[in-house]
Length: 315
Image 1 (cartoon, one colour):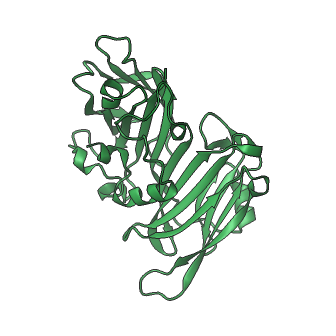
Image 2: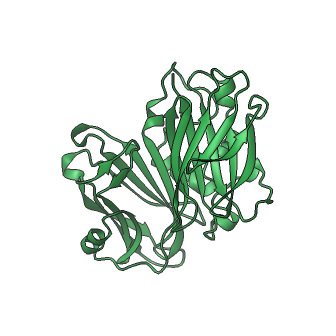
Image 3: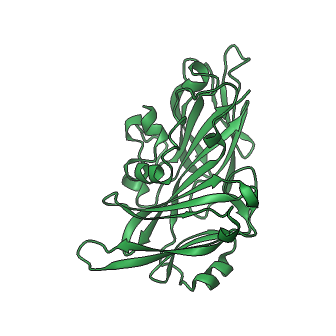
């Protein structure tokens, strides 16, 4: 069951693995090694999955931010991986390590094989400027940066707030259809409270999500989820309901919430819990654990978004 909740689906599993072969260690419901301290990977990785078009074909673009060190302090390494949405084949990959001083601003050119029936290859350029990026607690910067993916002089994906600078530097034209964020996976660490942010629809409002659960001191632990400081869900008798799902409404949009806190209740001291917030088409829609796939059905058509949170308890 955990495999369905901790993956991004068939196509996205491949790009998540390509971005980091170590990201799956310690991310399941089982316990991680060690006592009272979350694994280093739990504190330093965020992966976002986008649906876009690259070289004339639908593709999945995975962007993984990893906390770095060295000269740039909190600078994050960035891995951009493109996978063909139909075949699952990797199209290209670019790794940026901006904590090396000379690499905080630059570009890379990659070749992508032409689609079936076409000859030659297409050039894909990745541009970035993280020289003035400002960071919060997460590995991805808050502002003062851009990361851009360009193909055939068209902006395939643009991240960051320095949009004018990115268009000026790349010389790219605006895309016919913007890249669509379909999934986000992140690791959060805390004692009783775990926070994240999510934008459940394209160009929609960004919401604060707070998961509150005290499994150590309470005789009958319960789980409470707040969105924008408002309690939207409460699960009592958590020892019996350590896995489950419930539909809530956010901005009038039905969002299915799945939880698995087996690791917190029955795992080791550093086990993680996993939560998924997934938009769905109707509140009454039944969603089996075995069919939680982001790159299937209506998600591929741009109607869905999933946030996956790995929550790590520390003493």
